[in-house]
Length: 114
Length: 114
Image (tube, rainbow over all chains, first blue to last red; front, side, top):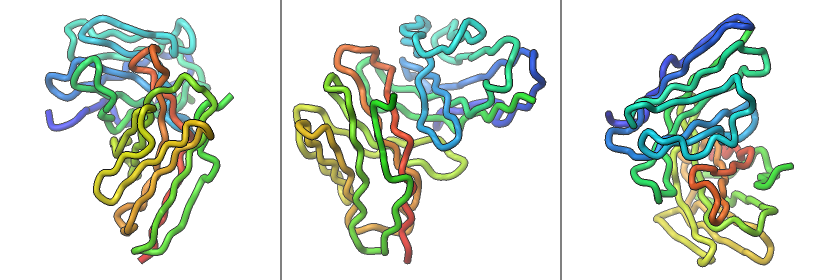
């Protein structure tokens, strides 16, 4: 595609529900990153993949958060048993190769947990 | 503890004048710095970057300066245009660390007045 796309753009859920956020990176991009951004803050790293391999998940806040990229393209970030503190903008980015410093961001998914 | 600090939440500049956005960092292991620009309802877009082995990088109207001894970098926009009005994020990467783990500042909102 022309850019990184994310779906849904907005997600409202009730506390305790599971949510799955999808990221479709730029076609052919090797690396894919997930960030979380609270209001008034910069993006905060969660995890990233090279191809289908999860290289670093040190930023995932707890074991309710997981991510996968089974075929090295589309990725899903899953949050189980959501809590109100999970409410934030979740951003996905991709880069063309493993050594690239330039990450292209998607528009984000605004998650609201009631 | 913020490793990348953008102490000015906002900046207002007249069209045609210079905009200077500042960023300070605390981690001497950062080896690469990036600036991202973000318009409302969009994801951040890469603007310009600099390696720690350089002290200046220029791209058109945008110049980034790095002062390693002061752990300070700045983004200069000359001349400023109304279309430059956006939130600017400074980001840094740790040498030898996870390539995906960019650490962002909180951002500075630039307003360029016609």
